[in-house]
Length: 593
Image 1: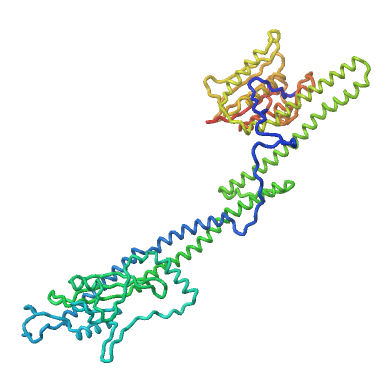
Image 2 (image 1 turned 135 degrees about the vertical axis):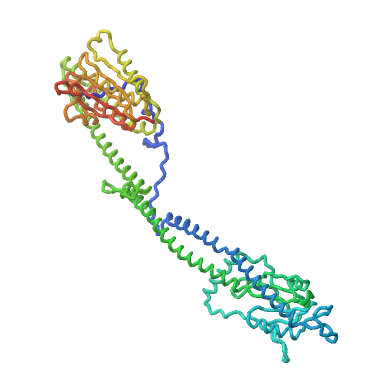
């Protein structure tokens, strides 16, 4: 009736990889244990904050902190401020020196004054009294400390020392009262400690105040007394805020007609420079605080879009593993269009494939039980009857039934074992190039070699048609693909009438190789084009002995073809009168290129 059969697998050209026992071992309890160790499953832990969230947050904050740290290093900006301040201080010192050189000098010997024009070898000296008065007047409009030294280095005047009839008064700048609380003071000290290294000031010389009246001038004054202006940037002792400050000093010679009569030294605190740098840093820190808040929020958002879906997928997978029934579903994130969506789709597909495989296993177990039960029932009936039969002929017939049932069970068990090992073999084996044309030619040669001369006129012929010179190579397992074509050819031969022809064709169609097997038999019953690939489905020609086929051949063939990424279909060939002229099986296998 139908072009369906399940021939026993020929030994020619088939692979034995499926029968390998490697990878399993038996324990003392007799249970098969996989050769690959399975790691013990750890239950999912509930965490307040995901480690992935912390990593994302740490990376983003670290990158921002490095950027801000680089911006806080204001070494060049500080150098430019110091240079501008030193230039301004030097100009101011030159103005003071010029004024003192004109208005605070007198001739060394006033008796020799002749009223002539300046010059003529007169010697001038600084007038201490005039110099003090001028220094006091010059510093009224500035906060710069001005000190005047005589030509021998002795101090003459200091803007912070007031000298009068009542004695000497020294003016000392007191720090501004710190009304900040302890936390704020600690924060300021921490800021100063951090920013002191951006840049550091340890390489600057330490400024020490000279005791009043001591004739030990500063290095700048010594250079100024030699006729050259000089300036130095000092670091002071730690301030109330816990960091060293800056002190800028510039010394300029007091001259009259190239005669050095003394030196004036101006010094100024670097508080304004520190305040300018601190202002810029606070602006940067304010921007950093805003950027940090945005970064933290975006990091939590980014982590939420990654960690939360992954956690949901993990919990769903855990429920699928530990739950019962099929009400557990994997969340669908495929609409995201990213890797999380791909992972979600893959897990959903894997879960679906798992349930499909479990259904197939259940159906396979039920089908196996049903198929084995039939010959066992027949066998039991024959065994129970044979003991009560005295007629030798009937006993012989019962013994023949018993032998057929035993042979049928043996064939059925062998085919079931082959089918059950097929999945494992297909998943482990490495694909190799297989020339489909050579396989079909080999099957035709085997068929021709097995024909007897007496049967040449009646036996169905096997014709192979392939384009000359066309590459028909596909990646696959040669033994299993040979098994597919053997099953299809044997099926077609079994349904072909005497003198019929089974036609094998192979050709390339795009990126696939298409093989067709056509016969001249009765065709496939209407509506059974898909059912013939089910396990244990049999529809044999009339007159064929019952039980010679297990009904697994086409099912195994479909399983092999689909494992190679191909497809197999069955249809009827229409005849001239519209009736089926035979069955047509089409196998499509993808090519490697």
